[in-house]
Length: 343
Length: 77
Image (cartoon, rainbow over all chains, first blue to last red; front, side, top):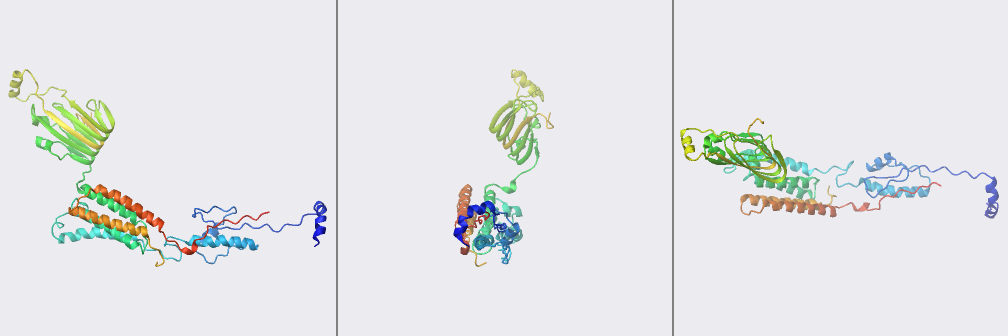
């Protein structure tokens, strides 16, 4: 071909002749694109998902790239495919496909803990005091002996984690170990076996019962019925009563023939104030403390001739039985009523 | 499985949990009474160190340290 003559006649050729046909347009190359690699961006061509899935399943017979015809295309196509092949098959020691999965150490550790929890209460009665006298719940989570079992559970997770440094798959052991430590902290700080959950009604009929420290709930709805006390106290008698519901509602049913002095403390919740429910408002908030005195709405009934004599001599001053109530709650409500059923 | 590198984070976590277990057992026997609340920050800090150790020393197969694949430029025109 005479280059010079082609160049000189180029302008004339362009004006008259058809342009030479272009070669076949290159087919879009299915490029490798693994969205899991954060540095990768989608190629501009179409992404052939069959290529992606085959690459990531360690298929050695990968000959999807028959569309290349140029040398350049093949070389460019091979480089990303090679790197992508390695990137696709790199796992954290537990790959899929031909590589066997490492043994899940967290699952083994959990089964070890379950076996310990079953075998320890079975073996303990044969070991002599003090472990032989405790119930299973006290052995596992009780205040004195439970901390040893929880420490053993934490140690089991620690041992499996140490083993997991070299063999096996230690994923999840840290989370389980953290939960075990939290459980150990809980067991060693509160008495889990003495948690009271439920609804309860206290109706003390003697002064000693009312004074007892036994009226408390951890979670639930507690009702303290004091209507039986004024008959026990008599005029001028007084008693201090304490009641506590950590989480839940506390209802104080107060008698109508005694002076009741109520001190309520609620860390987070509401206290009924103003007057006896359902009148009055609820004050809600955090760190509440409220004192209120409820005087009897009906006259105190005298119970015998001795009282009448006293009253005649003592210038008519009424001697009321006084009940001092201390009601507390961590998260809940405190309410005062005259009637259990709710008026 | 012998080709798997050592998981240093797991080692740190294992030592941490064993130490905490000993602390709980000693506390249970009454000889040394640290406030139990102190063990929670120890746990949190220890788990953080373990996670950092695992991330820093995560061993990768060396032969695949290549550049990430770049898509071939289009050839039209």
